[in-house]
Image (tube, rainbow, N blue to C red; front, side):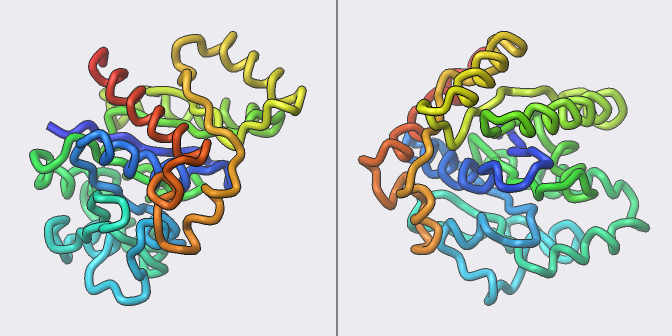
Length: 256
C-alpha cells in the first residue's frame, strides 16, 4: 500500500516543487517505487521531471474530472526514474468544473486508489494556495510535508497552514497528520536563519526533519534542463541533502 504525502505550503516560492521533484528522485535512487502527482496548473513539477506539458494527451485535469484513469495519464520520468501524473494550464479550469461534482474534495483520493499497489510513495505537489486542488491533495494524503524557509514571514504562514490541516483532519480526512517540517534554501551564514531554525525545533520538536536543504545553485539550474537536481549533479550539496532526506522519509514511515 502506497504512502501518500502532500508537499504543501500556501506561501509561494518556498521550494515545494523543488522538494517534490528531488524527493521523488531521491526515493527512486533508494529503490522505492514513486508516483509524483502535479496538482499545480503551472506544471513546474511536470517540466522539472523532464516531461513536456505542452503535448499532454491526458493529465491531472482529466483524472480529476473522471475523463481518464491515472494508469492512462501517468508518464515516466526517465531522468528521475519515477512516474509522473502531469499537469498543465488546463488544470486551472478544474477548480470551477469540480464545484458541482459529487465528492469534489475526494476526486484525487478515489483516482489514486486504483494505483495504490503500484507504488511505495505517492507525492503530491500542491499549488501555493488553499484551493480546491490543495484540498483534494490533503484529502488524499496520509500526511503533509511542509517545506519552509527560515525567515520571519514563513512562520506567519505556517500557523495558517497548521490550522487548515487541523480542520481537514477534523472534517474530511482523519488520517491526515503533519509528517514534518523541512528547512529549505538554508543559509547558515544568516543569523535570522539560525534563529528561526532554533524556534522551529523548540516549537515542533521531532516534527522538524533532521535533514536541512542548503541554498544551492545546482538545484536551481536543474529544472531548465528538465532533470531533477539529484540526477543533474549528484555530487552537489543540494542533491546529497535530498538523497539524505529520502532516506530519512523511508525511516520515518516505519514509525508511522
